[in-house]
Length: 267
Ligand code: GLN
Image (tube, rainbow, N blue to C red; front, side, top):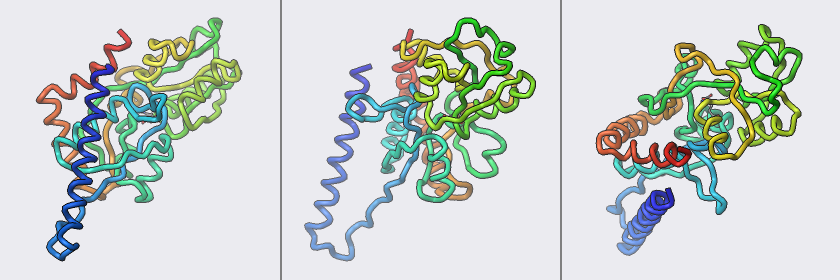
């Protein structure tokens, strides 16, 4: 894992060095009109804390499956970008308002979102779950009369909303996954609703003492894969580059290597 991250960082640094070299070359010819136009630097919004897809290491460096896939795809396709860890709901809003060019944030591809965004090919299968800290809560039936934690604007929130009347619970919103988990661990809320790969990773790495008690059916509308997205009709060249790069890194083994780094690390 360390080795992969170092390689990844080294790659980013050498790309930055190349960019600086290119700028230096431009100014040394006196800024003449034949200087190449500066390449666009896409702003790609992401979540803040959504391991193993995107999360900050102790020094603030962002790592994770999404972060490394984007880096590999950009290198393959030769586009430049800046990663903007805004939070999930804020990232979607930034793309909708045109402040960001794209979003990669473990974002589930849904029909409702297809009205607003254009999605890449799916790159990771997912579903949603409910998790608890209190061992006396063994199933959704035990949530009757209780308050549960959900993450604003997410698929798992939609799943919780679809269940709350049937099971008799109410929901309270959080902007980030880590704060949401802590609320359950502290006993303020009885359960949290989250993407299964993310909840499983947090539990397997020992980061939170929670247990999954329920999962949406794999054939339900809540079990849909992740995609990279742009605002509908915007940045079609970026979307095409993402898809082309994704196909290339799947074909050459880079995709499996990146995913394997994170998934194998939890055994
Ligand atoms: N996959 C979920 C969604 O798209 C959650 C994403 C996230 O929290 N980053 O709604």
